[in-house]
Image 1: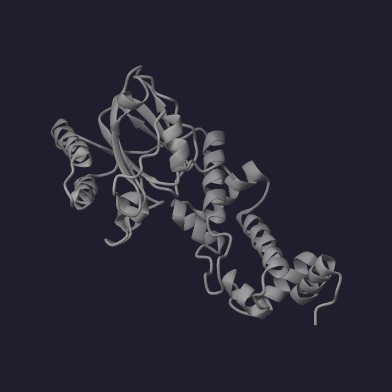
Image 2 (image 1 turned 30 degrees about the vertical axis):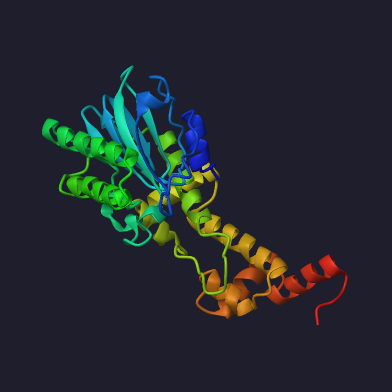
Length: 310
């Protein structure tokens, strides 16, 4: 699984300290102009997932890679990046200019989940081209963000949330940028990377009842806007396994962890892993391990404590 860039790592890469102690509400928000943070020298964006949302204004030619798609940015555009989607920007101009704001979901803790908006949907396109007039409008929003962020106004965080919503609603009235097919091998690698990220995001299970949301191969294919055959081909070419095999391996690994290290009963583990009935889970587990879940748990506990389970 690819490394997920944290806020701390993001600020370190930009040669900045993570802001704190400013009376900010839960979550995180910041706005910046790229050249101001890195001395005018852009650092290449690696292809990986971030632990935060980013809304980036791109003024210059570039290329955006995400999932199995590539978008050529030949004009002004807004990029909406979410924690679920690994992406990479390849700059085609020497000195592209950009504004960006970064935020966490906690920043909208009392205002509904920001991820519910289509611009942050994993199956949507994250790039929206802007007309010259729209660029002027977007620049004014970013400049207002800078002004409010530096102010001492007691309710500035509410204003900043409203400005983020202005960007979101502005582009939701615009058609997303056209997508071109990416080269076959990099596209397969991006699909496999995104699949592994989404699969791994569901684990570990924190408590009984906190079940996984994506359980079937079709669930993942639907998230990516792909036909299941396309997803299977990409995973087979990259990982040497089908979608079902990858899911089964991860479910089995989590089942072994829970049987060995938790006090959940077998039914709770079964439902948590998305099985409709405990009997289906027992059959799945025995087929893979050649032991029932109860036998596996007993042996694991015995190996750890040297005593048989009561």
